[in-house]
Structure formats: structure tokens, C-alpha cells
Length: 221
Ligand SMILES: *[C@@H]1O[C@H](CO)[C@@H](O)[C@H](O)[C@H]1NC(C)=O
Image (cartoon, rainbow, N blue to C red; front, side, top):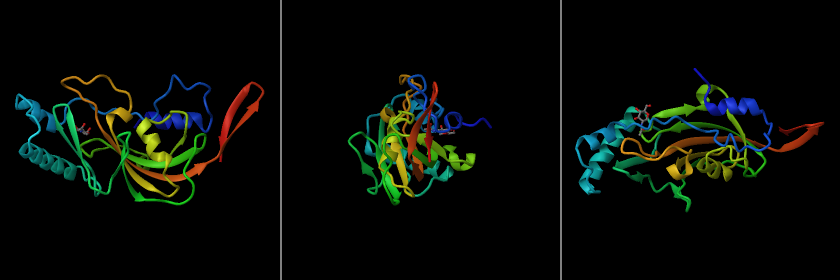
């Protein structure tokens, strides 16, 4: 199996910072299939998408819960109810919501200082799509991710979400499309997706820049 984009990235960088990261902005990119899920199929098959109606919504939520159960989602997983281009996020009151649109649930808070710009975060994560299907997992890959903060190396919602975690903390992030990876425009057949991540912040490292002749890199420990 090919390592995901971002693992190749972290191997390549090994704590080295590239000068000017404009060309490789996105690290955590998942190839979320843009073609409709079963849920969308059933909507478009019905010909027209009805406006939000409580009966419809209840039915969609039930379908959603079934799909999630089949995907064996963890407790307190959010549901995404799509009607046309409208998406309603159904999540328990345990979730916090930020003005940015990011939602999160602290499963464990952890101890110590939150990471700052320039520091390296070492973390495990599991990424899910809206159906609760596991799309990616560092646990399965066998090694955690290492990323320096403040380089725009993470998708914005992920960076915002991990920034105020503490080492040992576990948090579930619900990242809305506008804080997710850049994708093409929505069309009738595709729409921007939410992503859910379970993140476990293992540790935070300080990094120093060192220069040897013309060569400059960053060491974290
Ligand atoms: C989630 O991923 C599965 C497997 O790739 C796919 O069948 C399903 O349609 C996806 N759900 C959404 C909402 O994209």
C-alpha cells in the first residue's frame, strides 16, 4: 500500500523546514470520493430534493445511523444530513463549536503546554468521511505524524484543532469543508465534504534552526 501523501511528506522533511512552502501547502489531503454516497443517490433518484422537512430529516438521520453502524463508528460520532447542498451536522451537546465553524469534542484533555508556532507536534489520527468510514489512520501505518505548526502544512481546521490540545490529549475534530483541503467547485454530482478526525497528541517538540554553510535546516527534539 502506498503511504499517504502526508507520511511521505513527514519522512521527507524529517524536521527540516523547506524555505518557502508555497508549492506544497497541503499535507493532510485525503482523496475523498466526490461521487455521491448511497444517501445522495437516494436523494437524486427521487428526482427532486425537497426542502428541509422534519420527516425527511428523521428518515435521513436513520439511514445515516445505519450506515455509521455498518462502519462501526466510535461513540458520539456526528451525523451529516445532506439534502441537496445543505448539510446539517447532528452532534451531541458534548461538542464545542468555534466561530470558525470547527467543532470538537475533548475525549481526554491531556497535560502540559499547548503547542506553539514553530514547534513540532507528534500525533496519531484516524480520519473519517461523513459516512463514518475510516479513510486514513496513522495507527494502521504504524508511525505517528510529525508536523511543525505555523507552516500551513496542515489543513486549516486540523491546525486550529490541534493548536490548543495538550500532550496526552485526545480530541475529535469535525472539520467543515471551508476549513478542509482545497477541492474543486461543487457540482450536481459532487459536493464539498466534512471530515472527522480523532486526534491523539503524543508530544510537542522544540525546534531550532541550524545553518551549515549554505544549508539550513530545523532540528526538533
Ligand atoms: C465514505 O467512504 C466510503 C468508502 O470509500 C464510500 O463508499 C462512501 O460513499 C463515503 N461517504 C461519503 C459521504 O463520501
